[in-house]
Length: 196
Image (cartoon, rainbow, N blue to C red; front, side, top):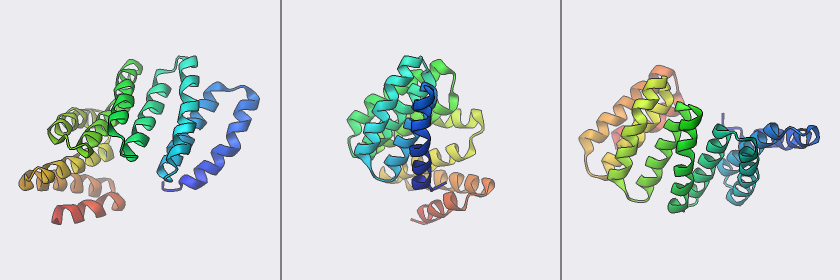
């Protein structure tokens, strides 16, 4: 909801309580969420430090979805740092864990993150392949914002490749979904992009 600092403050209060109670699950969950918040606040080193504390706890617990979530967050952090090759290593570890856990939403998210990362690495065709793998999963689980986000990114890739009619098609599909779900924040950048 855009209140990462507030969330971080709460997790910093909750984390010692989980540790005092010996709740490894609560501790891992708090650390994972803290790492994501640090990344969104631009504190990349702190994000990596916190996520790397969560990962061994998830492994100790044998929690596949927790591991996958933390690996995906590590991948996103490295991708945001411009270290796409390292990011792919984490995304590729997360993907089979999501499948093992039966978490289709997590799978779609990681496929989208791989595609976005590939696009940033200049691997546009590879990015399109991963977006085309993610899109049916978003649709299958009925996650309209996930679908819209993937369509918007596909539009960017098509634009980068000089396929403007395809780009506009993807942007317009995304725009319609954002309007359908009532997301003004999602709609605004897409409206601008579709006019570009």
